[in-house]
Image 1 (cartoon, one colour):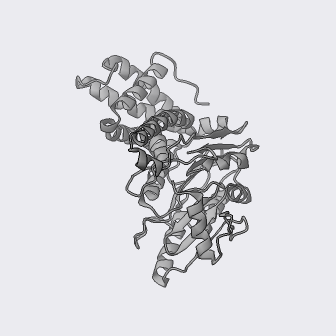
Image 2 (cartoon, rainbow, N blue to C red):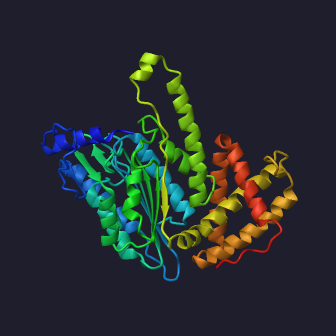
Image 3 (cartoon, rainbow, N blue to C red):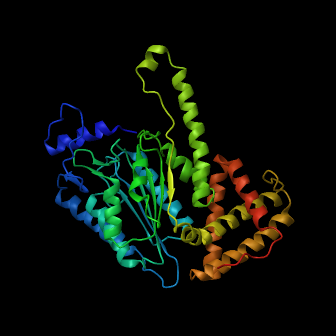
Length: 405
């Protein structure tokens, strides 16, 4: 992803400051969360404000006695790859955490005058966190924040709308904003170069789980505007979580995929002619990082239990349809065994659904939607779908319905 020095030059240029002889960034915001911004046209400003107002108004209230999850997914840089990643991650996280109606997507756009989502400005990000803070029970609910952008070596994640807005979000800014909003339990997923800098800011927070695309001193890969996902977003969301894995299992699976892709990238670099290789930075492993607070895992597990079970039911429904048509997935050719496991999974989904105030028709619709996702995923992830379906079969076949508590 883009280097921190390039980001610093952009910020300094907008602030009207000179670059010090040492090449070090002079922060025009004094460590505060902000941006240098030119006004939109009146029509654009009105449309942007309306989009944000509608997005905030659409957030559903917290339900007493239910672990509700709220999701903020934000593209902070105006390259198409980031908006697509924020859009897809928002949808996948919403489905995984049963957060439909409690998810908001912000975007710096794609460089086009037409906006699909509310603008990812500092004020709008603050407003999203502030509104969620007003809605939640901080002792009961979970907030998931996903950010995707370029990042700098100092830990700053860049905000850019080319020609209009430039700024930065630092780890301490996010920590301060979450605290000011009254958000206690949080999952933070940061897709940017040097995003490991977010780990220290939350290291002593027992109620925070932080996943990053890179170590504090490493770049990450795949942020070219022509791509649909960065390497991290592709592995984490487009493969692992889309396949129905739990959050941390998805992260573990993503690490393997990222390592393979980065090995391939390094092999291509090694195959370059010597003169070209000398002019091209060596692609070193991004070394994604995680930090898990002492108290957060039980809440995350409860928050994702219903979504995990619905996903399992979707996989088994798909596997059963294939087995009945004599096109069974690998090691999943016995319709009787799959049907028995599916009945167990469906019963668990109904029990868990009742806990989050979903009736049986809601559960059936969720399983049907999950089956459609599996069907769409199958052509590009045949082995992954088969593996996840086999895991569900192994987990649920022959055993009693697990306690919904």
